[in-house]
Image 1 (spheres, one colour):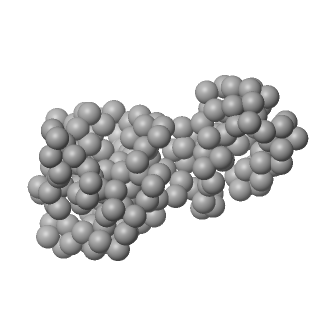
Image 2 (image 1 turned 180 degrees about the vertical axis):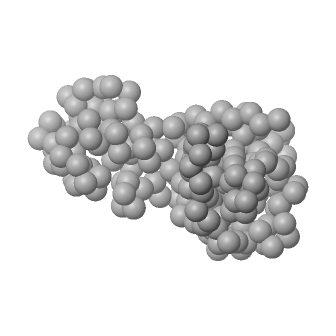
Length: 207
């Protein structure tokens, strides 16, 4: 990726990849209300239809190679009707890369690691992608624990919801902190938020 200058005028643009005019990498933007996808490239937003044939093929190939995603999204309906194949690819992109951050989703035409973005807490994307913390895949129970912690629920309450003892919860908690590379609950939650694990909703409107 090209180095971005850091003048005071452009400093805020580091928040979202692709905002600088010379940045040809792509940041996909998921529109929460419609689950449509726009993208930012070369300093401006583009509609999904403006995606180049080459980049569209890259996304299609990624979708085709993800059998669980094909199984889920081939059954996806809008207005009571199954969606088209092209719409499936757009939905796949939405669920895999719908978050907004300063890390491009496509660099020099190469797709990067999927994001921790979720449309909602029980997002269907959990059926075909892994949420990760510091690159470490999270188990379903760990995702539940983090979700509850981010809602400021106490450990005992979370353990009761999980139907486990406090001591068993402590073991799971220690494993989770190890994955995050931290030793405290505040440190764990900071890492979770930084890596997008607390963003159940990402409502973005781009004109």
